Amino acid sequence: MATTYLLRWTAIALSVALAGIALQPLPSTARSRYRPPSNLVRPAGRQGAATRTDCAKAGFTFAPVVPESNYGLTAAEYPTLYWYHVNHQFSWARFELYAAQPQTLELESDPIYQTTFRLNRETRLASLTLPAAVGLPPLAPGRDYLWKVTLICSQGGPDDDMASGSQRSVQGWIARVAPEAGSNAKVANASDRYDGYNAYAEKGLWYDAIHDLAVRRKLQPQNAQLRLDWRDLLQETRLKSADL
Image (cartoon, rainbow, N blue to C red):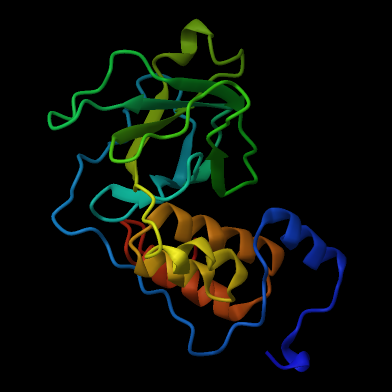
């Protein structure tokens, strides 16, 4: 690439390098090109009804960033999962990851990972990266997993007795694809390309495309092309809002 198109070595570029994504200027023709897996649909999670003090405000939005099928693929052993929570007064969130039995999709009774954390109400787009440091094994290729986020309306803590009756939950499904020798080179090198998220999207790797683009948007919040591409990917979801 011509020298005029190279990024200067700035603090932002250093941060990007550390994040494993080498950003380069996006051409005006770059568009998201998600290729979803065919004939794969998983049951969608519904928002739980709040029976006591409801922390949802007018215009409340709580939704996982998943395709319409509620099912997405990843090539990552420890992927990052995204969801929106907008216009709320919820104080806590609980994240759970369940493994599903092959063919029946019946969930194992206990989550293989769960954590509870305090919410930042100013953050509209939230995420959680599955952690390797806690001893969680990598996602097994070809196996389905369900991830669930529950918002908890409690000022006294997530285990407060009053919290159980005022929760909202959403969920999504994820599966890791098995590595393909040789033929997966484009995806393997996607982090070195200006259109990494499109390379992932074309392979049907929803979670990798979303994560790649989310990181780029965070590092370049004024980049109009990234905003357009994010809007295009959201068209594949139930959100369908350019405002998110």
